Length: 498
Image (cartoon, rainbow, N blue to C red; front, top):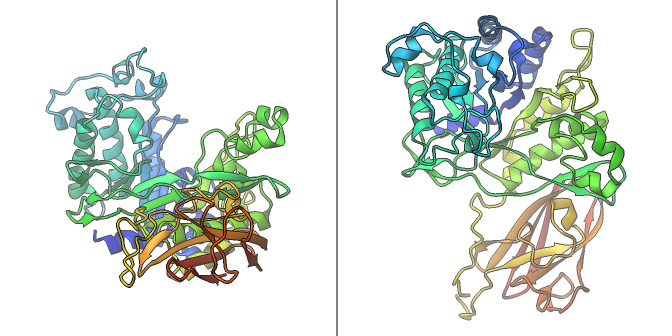
């Protein structure tokens, strides 16, 4: 799978958690076809099983059949997570083919839950599997080959840096993933399977274990707006290395998503102050719960924001639209599922976001990628001299001002790494960001990250201190801004894209 093919799928990706068990599958398929989705992440898997495994895999198989009948191009992803439960593990008899794949004589026995776990004093979760244990490797392999047999061609491997705590050279997880790749080469519907996990980089001996990296978004609360407003924060890049295709990549593709982990924290919402709640996860909830609890217009705006934010902050990144995601009880006793579908008799629990998603997916990333920051988080300007004068250019240049909280930084922080500008050559520095709310803000440019030599658009003459900043007028929500700074002439150029 060449990178351009992988990126085609990731650019049409959705989180479709447990769509294999959906009670509105026909309407889900309608939305998939309408929006042009091609990669359905988390489509199958268990965290805690609610039915026997044979029944689970049969439902997964039937859902895959229906989805591929509608669009055979679609890649379905299954999950193998960092949590197991005794009643799930010990209810499954180990197939002979699993023993044989590990070079063992088949036995008439069930999986052994206790043989999968970390020692009690290890500090790991009590139900976290230890991939260095052969029993865990067999459990992962068993689940993987069954999903492949059901028509699933991708795997999300969960929080891979947790269950590999005793596998620091990644030899054991590498073994399992390699075995699944080999099984997929023979038995997968298109003779290939791909892998991601929650990781920025998993490279061993220069080679990436994963086809691409994946992570939830990082957030920062905005307190000077009514309601529960959050903005996204730029973080580390996707690591590079030799891809599973044998190609050296400076940065592997990266997939962002709205994650779930505990629903709404009712206690936090009742007992914490406004400011404390703002910093408590996503306003006292997980990501998808926060998103689902916003009104429809705000959800549409945040989808638009997430898509554009991804395009400009990580040109190797893509956004998995939330097609279907468990909201979770989280203390309020109300388990629900977020669905992108428009609310109708076919999907009475829909959240009516399919039109907004279809519009963004039809537009694509290219328009916004033109404003993207460099793919590498290497700011440059290191030992670079101006060719005309020989003056050493500053290594650190920071964009600062009242706009900073809206991009995840502290207001008026002249030393922020979040709003540090990239050196783009020719004596110029640049930074792109997205402003989620219209309004009037101010900004200045701090050279070397201090307030002793700052620049604004007011005549280009440097100033010292916190005053003298330039105005930044944003006419509409979710405006992309690119500011370019020429150091030697103190020139500032502002571009905007809506």
